[in-house]
Length: 466
Image 1 (cartoon, rainbow, N blue to C red):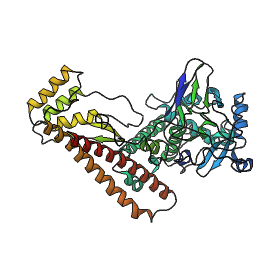
Image 2: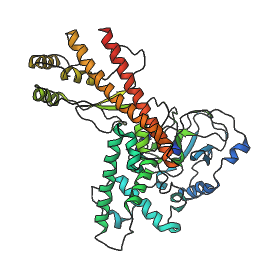
Image 3: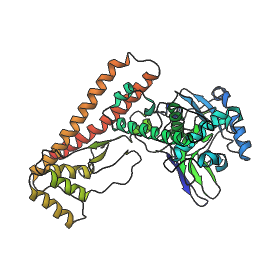
Image 4: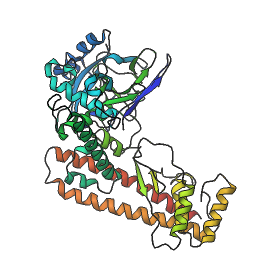
């Protein structure tokens, strides 16, 4: 997934959407220092001298001023953007022209003409990064390319070892990570096949190098009307889930910009929000998690037991009445037996809790006769066409349907808790990068357990109220 900018075709703005794989350096789970006063001495100590020439180079290349209010600095997690002066709400933090953004259009024609439609924009920008790296100092983008995270510095789950991935096996993120790794391998094979037609003409690179470049794109690029683009300087913003600042794209003036959502003191770190992402999405796409993430959610699957004597009838009815839900940025895939559970606030009203589609599925699963199924179909036809969206008339049957959901979710919670227990003794044997990934796995699993437990509590309360 790529982040999306907000796009507008007039003098107003539209957010740009951000990509998927970033580093741990991009997120802070607390805002403890957000409003702290910072002295000029402290501010200067945070300046990253290795990046001193990046902004001047970019402004020369663009031919316009990009930012007078921000500077690249160091945080405990890596590079970040800091206020170079006092900033007020509504101030423009930066403007980056489209002409100094890296997109598939920057690939040389001799490479572009070899690539088929199966090679997507992310893979194309990854190739561009590899090409510019090979050129070294001769690359026109060298001041930017050399400051990107190096091989081995990304913590997205696609870079985890099999042993590290096993830590998150109960989570839907486990299978989504495997799916994304497979996609990267397919893109790599397609590119290598195209290049093999002209041996010696194009650079050689390994799957590991291609995956790293691919990860740089998914974690740092934005997607807008002009496609996938890396936006130098802007991609040093770290994430704050409470911020109301986004990357914005102006289609008329052909540039992207960010507007301050609040006041910032000199030397204070300035952050934006990448999106309303769950920890699973953040970990897959950016390589970090947020403690107690309010956007956490779990994809939950239910299946009709094949020994159910009404298996064929239930399957046929579900297939006929299934409606794919609106795309959610945190949902990896969707099917008729897949449901997204979000955290249910304590005290949530009776009808405001677990998804209606999941409860409807439970009602269908617990039907014991064809007549009960036919009654549900008739009821749907007489209303809005959605199946089993009303409480069953028989109280015991309604409780039975919801008790089934409680059983299945509780079983999944037990699986999560068993996995979390296994993490504790393994921590003492970990070092360096593995310790960090252990903590990320803990954040992911405990957050998803919290979501599942809130759903169970709501279902129990619902059954008690009948």
